[in-house]
Image (cartoon, rainbow, N blue to C red; front, top):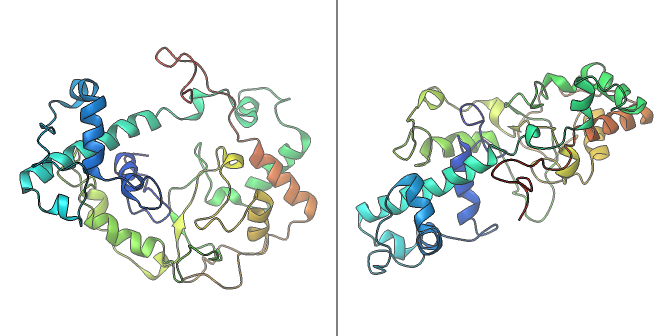
Length: 301
């Protein structure tokens, strides 16, 4: 994920650690600022932080380091450039700490899903409907053209003709077409000074094409039964609606760009659709498994 996986639906971030920074300052999510986050770390986690990342700046000097602020706000923009850089480094390291935890949230940290149990040799782990759905997944429905490998994603971007509805949805959401420009300009991308291994090879030849308009990242299907609503705008409330979208070959309108020509009607009947939904449900992991440092599992309080 760190090396090859673009983050967010439009790929506007190129690492897990930089992805973690976006929600932190988003008014629609955590509504925080990098200065505020740095002060919280200083006040409550100073020793832990410095054990991993080295000394923090002296944030008790609030004349130099105001209590809150981010780029575009006077408190941050009025700081000396060296102090802005110091806060940016704390902010980047905060993202890297979150990423270190997220990398452990993989299926092997949980009781295996029915699908994984089946692959391991437990022939009773899947029922008849789920087995029929698995055959459709790699056969008539051809879901594995994009949802492939152990992660059930090709990590690529496709225009699947997804309708854009809802009060918070942009009139024209061009997806990857905007994401490319954003990730290239991002000071926290993997080519930037805050990266532990600066590398621009994934950005050097990146350029938009007509195929990027309205294209969004192929989502993993692991635990998909827990991650509704679905699509980049949450237009579908359950997996039946998602399968039905593909069964009709995408929407007839209401989306940006040109639909991928591979999105064509599947001609599934109701039982086949139900079987496919049943198979998707078999990709749900079980309870967290204990580990040495997290005896109650990674999701315990």
